[in-house]
Amino acid sequence: MKFSTLEEFGIRCLVQIARAGPSGALTIPEISEREGLSEANVAKVLRLLRQEGFVVASRGKTGGYALTRPAEEIRVGEVIHALGGKLYDDEFCERHSGGEEVCRHEGACGIQALWEEVQDAIDRVLNRKTIADLAQTPLIRREDLLGGRRS
Amino acid sequence: MKFSTLEEFGIRCLVQIARAGPSGALTIPEISEREGLSEANVAKVLRLLRQEGFVVASRGKTGGYALTRPAEEIRVGEVIHALGGKLYDDEFCERHSGGEEVCRHEGACGIQALWEEVQDAIDRVLNRKTIADLAQTPLIRREDLLGGRRS
DNA sequence: CTGTAACTTGACTTTTCCGTACAGTTTGAG
DNA sequence: CTCAAACTGTACGGAAAAGTCAAGTTACAG
Image (cartoon, rainbow over all chains, first blue to last red; front, side, top):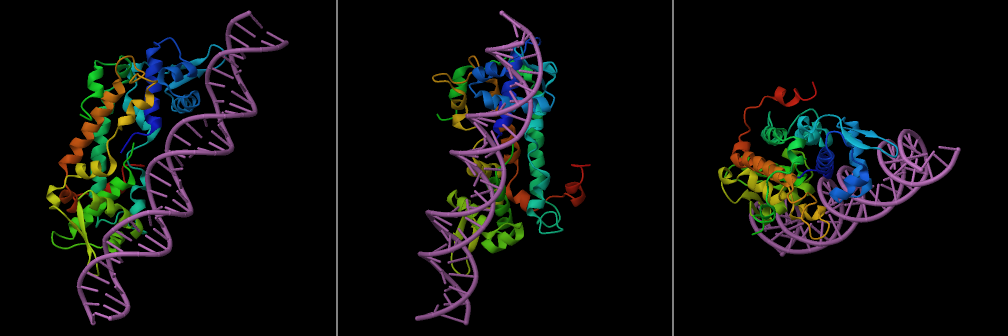
């Protein structure tokens, strides 16, 4: 149960671009440096973000990436959904089907219902937050980040 | 963003065993047939479930797997947690660290806070449901399973 | 006692996902 | 006009996950 790197890095790139302000654009090397990722990897993620319509790229010497919408209007859930798809695929039931049946559970699959509940819970959280929210780096002290998990 | 097959199959196996009743046990071929999975794969999952203490195995001709606790007491969240770990690993920040720093985000990483929120939301849902809940296969009609996703 | 049906275990193969590299295209500065 | 800096896209290699196979151990039925 984890996010794919694409999903996470996609959010991170958008946040960095948002921090550049509504007018300015950010280049791949800049994002790469600020997130500590390789340039090739950033380029790969940004390509998807562009294809999904979250950013526009301008080429040439003064190029870079900019958001297509104000960061306040981009919900995190949108990005995750566009980049990673849903929790369960359409093949969910086919994987357990023995031919014509849907699920091997006599008539209805309680697990799928639970998965949908989980999906809804995730979406609720992710849709509350926007890229702008993340960009202003909310009030979390470093001690809270490190502690509380091992100790 | 998806569950690993181990997590999903683990739940499925436990549900099948729970359906065999509190006294009866289920063999690998039986579970395999009911879930439409290969016997080898079922065996692999059950080994982990046994090591994590969710089931006990009896060998020999009348062998099989049985739950160590009543299905009502096994929360789905427990199983997921035991099988798949958490949403974010401990290496979460190390992956983005450039040496001594924690995160490349000046002082605090808003994404990690969001990830923790998501984790909590997932856990809340998963801990509400028990294996027994799933075993009685709640009231979901087959039409609702197929429709509503593509169309 | 013997055989069969079951669990146990480790290694192996296949598949999928990540990250990287490289060759190509575009654009503005000088 | 030329060059450098930027984006674009494909293709390759490695690592992790998923699934499979085979050999071994146990235990009950007959």
